[in-house]
Image (cartoon, rainbow, N blue to C red; front, side, top):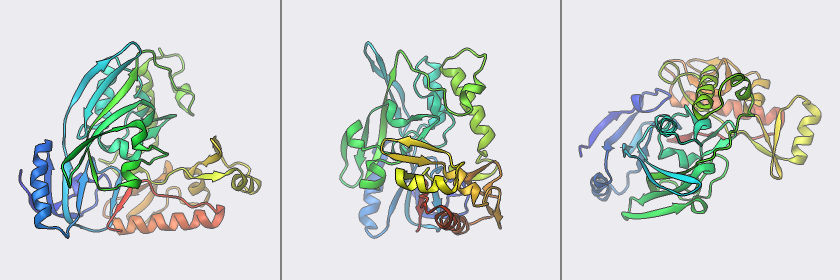
Length: 337
């Protein structure tokens, strides 16, 4: 396995930022991890970053250590029972292509998660979700490697500690585990989730099945979110904030139109709406900006640096905090902060 020096990551991050890795290698099999471990012993003071599709990170500086692009490939039905089919995928598989493959095989469940950028291995890190479905809803288990000790471990649903755009791998032990495979439990009798805004309307008059729902959601996402190949972005840049019932009541008193959804004992607000109310939608500062169709999406209009995009994000956070008393949290991992 070849290790490159001073390797450009521009094509490997969806913001299209011109940043470099001091060292870089590609990992098509777990066997190649021996090379990375040997390199780490020779460079104990330098960090290692495992990279999937580069769709959930913002580089604000060149990476001083080793970037490992995970390319582990697998798509396989491994078991089934009376109610479920169990499908395993390699961490390097493109998420959307894997979803469409499952639907093409006749297995429903992941259709609402169509067209989310990134890889299968990155999906549990973030507990990705869209249109009323989260990855944890159909997760069964995953295999992950402690790349520093070569220990291979299975993680159950409980082990992963999934939360809203969060997991054990993101918050508890970041950087320790290399996810190798993920297994999903897909129902043989699916329950469609189509009551999300825009989904039911786009399905009116159509045959209701997994592929038609997937097609509808793809159309909706394409109408709201820019294609990273045309306009650099990482999708939704901020999490929808959760506030207490009391905090929401105070916001609602001042801003009666504020949309919200009850989530257990908390209230979820629309980060996009909050940002729009602060006047950021479609605003541009140099080549860094927010998308004209969706205030939640930060974009690179061409030559923006990661620092400039991060400065814009911090300005948005400050203005939302000032107006609503709500602190927004970025979804992407900020590398170099």
